[in-house]
Length: 172
Picture (cartoon, rainbow, N blue to C red):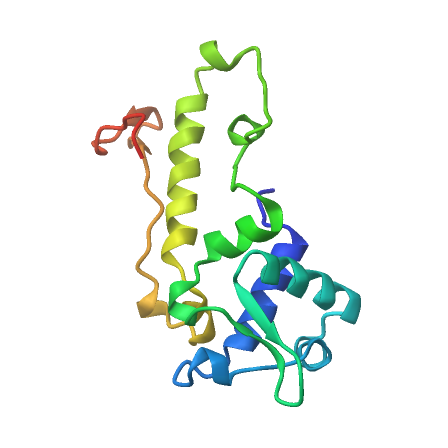
C-alpha cells in the first residue's frame, strides 16, 4: 500500500485548521497548540512535535504573548502538500531507489527504475500542484481534473502496449 505517513497526514490536518478562512490574512489566523489539538482531535504531544518541525521548516511561525500563537508563515496558496510532506518525512520517494541515502548494486541494470522515476515525478508534481488553500475548500466531483499520467494501456486483447505519451527523459 502506498500512503503518506501518519505524521504528514496530521501535519496537513493541523495546517488546514490553521489556514482557516482563506479570505483572512495568514498573520490574523492564530491558534495555540492546545486550541489546535482540540479543533483537530490530534493529541497534544503530537501537535507540539509537528508545530516544532513545521516552525523549523518555515511553514509556520509562532509569536508569544497575549495575542500570540502559531500562524502560517506564508499564505495558504503558497504552501504545497509536497512541501509539508517533505518537511515531516523528508524527500518524497515512491520506492527506496529514490531516497538520497539509498545505495543499490542493481541500480545500473534495473529495468523498472525509469518507470518508477516517471511515476515518482508524477506523484511529486501532483502534490506540488496541490496547495494548503486547495485543502480548505470543499471537494466537488467536477473540480477534480488532475490526472495521473498513464504510459501503458491495455488493448482489447489484453496485451500491454506503449501508449503515445510524451517522450520521457532524465530531465524534470
